[in-house]
Length: 130
Image (cartoon, rainbow, N blue to C red; front, side):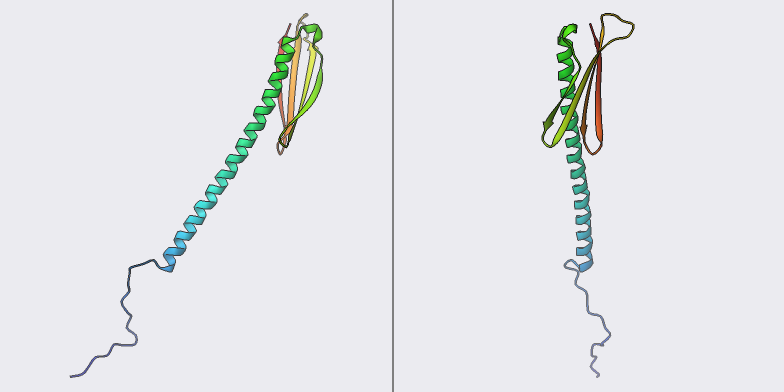
């Protein structure tokens, strides 16, 4: 009888107990993609939070001045401007007091607050007071 020897071309049996290089690379790519999406979302969230804080500060400054002007008697209201800073942002507030056309005894009050947030942002409040 002849002995059979294994052929040099025969493929060894594959052991499927573990991760191959392809699986590891695919998993790494998915983890990196998820990390990039999470980072982008976090940056957008922080930017939105900063914008909301600036808008809240600008609106609060305009409201304060408008309430102050409305509380004053009409003879003591005068136009003017001022500036204030919160963090690295500088706010400018301009208020105008003018007679309201065709309505004697009433004044038009306008408060304009502006600041720089990548672009110029302007917020106007207008009221009429006796």
